[in-house]
Amino acid sequence: MLQAVYANASGLTKLAGACVTAIQQDQGFRRSLMTYMQTPGASKEHRVTLIPGDGIGPEITNSVVQVVDHLKAPIRWDRFDGLSGAMPDGMPRMEVPAEVEDSIRKNKVCLKGTLFTPLSKKNTSTQSLNVQMRKELELTVNLVHGFTLPGIPVRHEDLDIVVIRENLEGEYSGLEHEVVDGVVESLKVITLERSLRTAEYAFEFAFLNNRRRVTAVHKANIMKKGDGMFLKACKEVAARYPNIEYTEMIVDNTCMQLVSRPHQFDVMVTPNLYGNLVANIVAGLCGGNGIVPGGNIGTDVAVFEQGARHVSKKIAGQGIANPTALLLATSMMLRHLQLHSFSDRLEAAVMETFMSRDKSVLTPDVGGTGNTQTFTDAICEKL
Image (cartoon, rainbow, N blue to C red; front, top):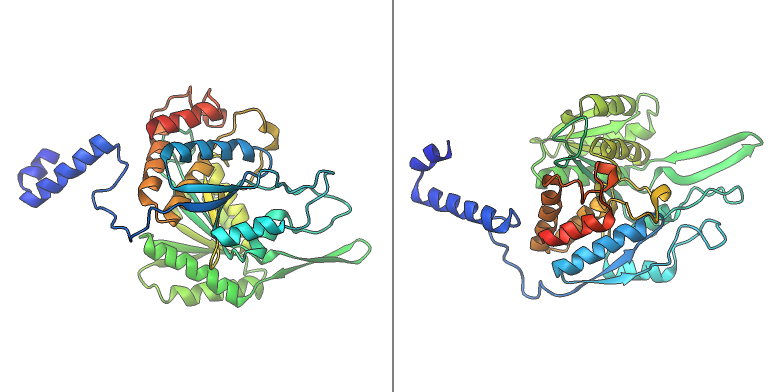
């Protein structure tokens, strides 16, 4: 087939095809044909705040540090190894330490593991340290990119779904109180301003990434004013993007459709709580919380993390945690920093490791017999 095409191709087409073939053979799909013309000084060192977090966080961030060092990317870490969602006495940590927040604001980029905030009868606050951080830094939008990887046994192949979630309000507003004994009132706050900001980000993402459809997830049939306002914002923004298909779906039907016919979804835009539910279903469809990367973005700051925020305390310290999600989040971070070649190489190394189907290097959660270090070593070898 290719020979027939080449026989009728122009000299320029043949040259381009030869270049692509050479790049594929010599570079292992690690860069595209078209070069990146950087601005002067683009190779400068970038300082990034690193928060290992709780549970498996220290193990998978250690994997990332090894890989980035092997990659020779111009990254210097500002580490906060001791930061946990709980105090030494087991009580929830009530605020983000000032030095951590200052570091993130200064560097404008952070890579973090999940911070575990325990429940306590003495502390009925719903504001976990993760939520506090998002609010303090005004990280208005959360993005989770779920896609299937070669060699991982899943029910549905070839998935590629992006969930864009409002990150600061809704049920996470933290406004609840006990009216009288036995009666609790929780307030769900939805504003037009933040709904518009989330919808604008979702459609802009779809436009810039050549996506064909945006689906707004809601429960406006019941919460007519709150979710109705979110839909109003989505419809207003959708009208500015006539080339992108816009659909709406009730959240309970969305969950059923995700597990039965997930290929109908492309970009999903959601209020806060629904986004958490949908993103975790997507992560499960793609192989689990060890696979799917994510990030949070505001006006000036970006924080990258696992797409499904789980600390996996049951396997912490066993050396078998899957660092794929955080490695791919690191690739997203490198692209955010305009370090495109480093991002491409890291992404390619992860893909090649899974394409090899070598179970001896893969972690148990994806059917392997290896561990965190064997997987990390395999990535470094392919770099």
